[in-house]
Length: 112
Length: 113
Image (cartoon, rainbow over all chains, first blue to last red):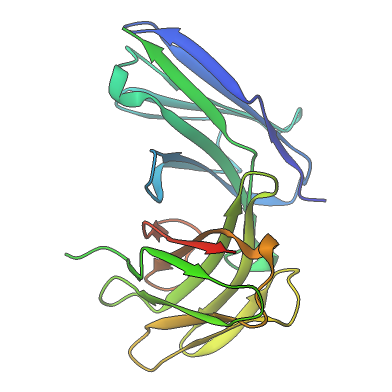
């Protein structure tokens, strides 16, 4: 199956770290992604990780992948009000080309 | 360079009508995918085109169709619109159908009344 699940809401104070979690069910995932969606906008690719990696860091973003538990997380350091948005994790499998399976999305609210 | 352009941004149609949405990918990108986003179902894959050929199709009824032109621009068509087709339709493009580097457009918000 291609169930990708996320918690719906997360609220953090400005300057704190945010951790957004995602679980997926298909162990044949080859690539996993994090996208950000601001109100009225499309999806912005934040980062991605290959399934043979455990961690990827990109400036304030850190992605952790636990393949055994099929768990993906996105940590945003020093969260800012501009980070308030909906965050989607997504997976794709090599055998389905470029079909992405998206999670339900986590709405991040940053409190000043 | 210009991003993925979707037109129109907003559209209101009546049940039973048909609609055509347009997507212009980033110059040089040959792969175009379409997604439907609704509050209840989230983001669902519609179809993907590469070099004018449909490579993959999601679980949508035959009322949903698409095509890609030789310049990589893509259109999707929905016939016999239903209220449940109200959604944000997102188009994404990438250079060679790679599994990373997909760029999404801002979407077309379709409302069926």
